[in-house]
Length: 58
Picture 1 (tube, rainbow, N blue to C red):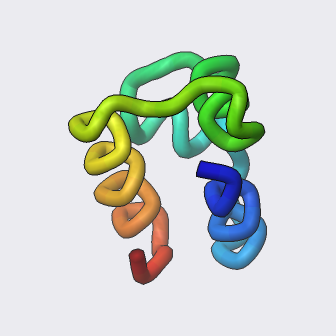
Picture 2: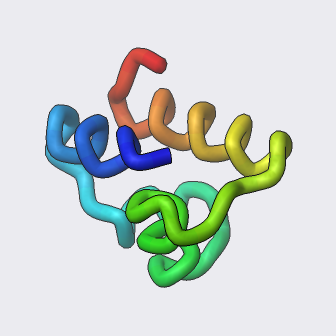
């Protein structure tokens, strides 16, 4: 999900704020954002919901 970085930049938020919103480590968000790890369907949905809560329109 390399678009995570782009969306975070668009809304002026950090990986840390996304991690806190989801309840996971910043390291995990970084792995998803860099494409090093693929999130489960449920985690992908949690990421989308968290990004929307932070001000994105996903």
